[in-house]
Image 1 (tube, protein in one colour):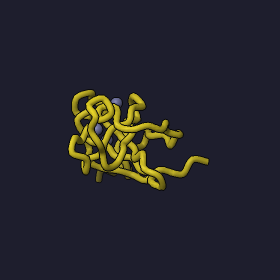
Image 2: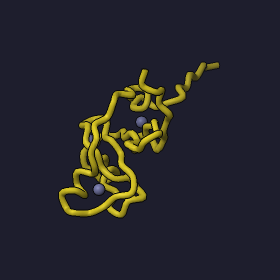
Image 3: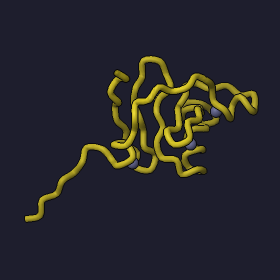
Image 4: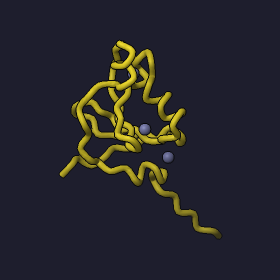
Length: 96
Ligand SMILES: [Zn+2]
Ligand SMILES: [Zn+2]
Ligand SMILES: [Zn+2]
């Protein structure tokens, strides 16, 4: 009988660090003069873009266009990450 070890998280989410994130708004909305609902932080390039509730969904578009898989919430009081390719997320430990 083969023993299957299944990690709770995909490799991308296991690799996410709860580093402090910069302040700012959606870089693409600011460039075009649009507004957003919530902000997401790309853990690959460190840029901030808007969430799926925002009309432009720049974070999702950026992930697809760039191949950067993981975003973190840039909202106050939220500390989670989401992997677009695997459609799965995790809570992150608070920064010590
Ligand atoms: Zn993943
Ligand atoms: Zn945006
Ligand atoms: Zn990125």
